[in-house]
Image 1 (cartoon, helix red, strand yellow):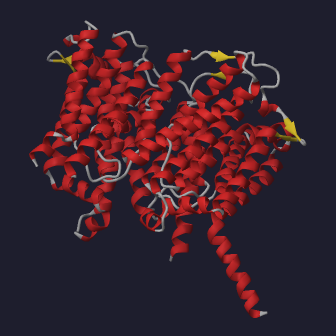
Image 2 (cartoon, rainbow over the protein chains, first blue to last red):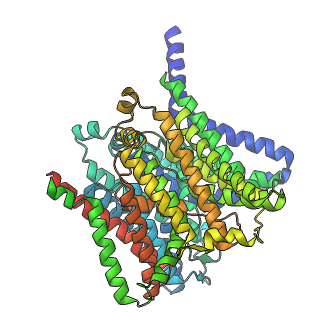
Image 3 (cartoon, chains in turn blue, orange):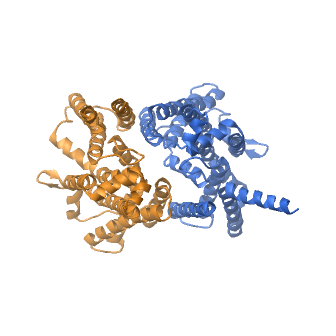
Length: 324
Length: 314
């Protein structure tokens, strides 16, 4: 009886240590919803919930890929530019009369191709990922605007707008975010490949001596990230009736912030995709709730900045306590 | 040993600059004129000031993503202190410089005192400072500065744009500090091995605090020159500046992992980026197209440099 109690205590504290950040985020989301809905009942209206969850799901999907990458000790600052380019490809194909399934598949394939190339340069030429993706961001952004001139893409065919559809009463983007989060969480914590990601980021030398091909591992992590950027693009490109063929401003920072606030350590080796998805939802909910309690839109970013800073400092304090 | 110094990153970069200069002056007649080159110097000023200090930041193994936002915030503080609070303009300039320096110092405190990785700390303050700029200005621009203020960004001194004198002064100053002083040696030591630096008695935290504060100061000085150059203050000023500055520093051969890098390299990096932008647009490439060239040059230069370094080591 006693040992069982001790065991469950041990299990509980281990759970707290491993998933502390996720629990904090979940609690913050719940508290936020309870408090804000007291102040303004319309906050819980179906329309607003759709905006919060479905409208931001694409950020969460991209953050899944980003989390995988950061866990291996790499980063991608070109993700916003890539989503802009892929969305333009996706829309242009749909408008030019190609079948819709083809327009949906193309961003995934191009995303995998571009990021595999980045991964190869990072792994085999030994140039840090932040530098390569900085260059890639420049190339993609410049390329996009000089090809399209910043025109809008409109008149996509019927049936193109995947992100506007419902499935069993839930918006497709939210469903996709939940599905991919659970899938990747399972894969990353229970498969050899998933565990090798943590090993590559946490202790490359140990990973190498235990037989993991570091270079191949990094290239594959980039390719998988590219796939999620492609999936994110489909949700992004099909949610509105127009596609602005420009780079969404600051999108890369939003995606990286979601991963990091979700508990993925920038040094690599720790974090889960559940955390990054919860962080995406929390940020969307904070943004929306500030509007609902009547804060001037011009102060939104400053308040978000303070909240990010507080989360980071709280996380550092929690980690230090766990270590000591 | 001698071979190694020939294939130094700075040498390769210098050759690339020369090649770019030759090709571009053949491609576009207006390119290699004194007027054009000096004018390009004006556009180079803001990013140069930030990139010089960013070299120190990156050499310590850190990064400062908030510089663009500090520039925006300082510009807004300048405008608001002068127009809304009615301070005399010189005093408003002083206030703006102080706010920028304090913003940088605050980054340094988060990084040294609370041990937050620089990338995360400055990612958070990037949002915070830009948000403060937007909140304070309510997205309204401020115009109508007195005539004498434009000397800084639009005037000249002995035939050379005023701000180029400032850039030249700071280039020499930072180059001297990084190469010849104990401060500079401490900066390299921290980047190469922070623990070892701490044990050999270097005031690691104090050095870092100073460097991040200097980075904030450089961004606010850039803000004042920027406002003087374009005659107006807006809260979105300096957006994306951090990536331009980091590109120049890394192109200049500073290792993103710290411990290695020079001001000379950063200087060539800055020049290469600007002549590419200007030369290509004179040669008829649309301004957005030049970003493709900058991205390619960044990746290719590092590829070549890594190749040579590996050869000379092996």
